[in-house]
Amino acid sequence: MKYNDDRMRDLFAEAIYKESRLDKALCDEVAFHVIDFKDELFALCQLMSDPGEFSSKQTMQIIQAYLVYATEHSIAASELLLGYKPENIFGSS
Image (cartoon, rainbow, N blue to C red; front, top):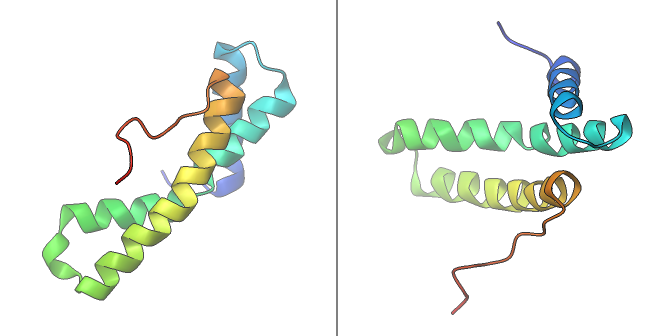
């Protein structure tokens, strides 16, 4: 069964509400952040499933789009749900 964004957000927010101590508004915000980059996540999953089907340009575009959207939304959701702001544990060169 395929869910639209509103239904998916409602299901996620409901689960977060039931399993956390957050108020409903924060649960809605976490759910928004978790699903807002789903298109980029799906594209990355397709790339990983069959990398030979994508040109190097397409591969780069998919990776960049995922990193731009997923990173920011994941950080926001982590702060709201976990009270934790992820940092780069791998360091930078």
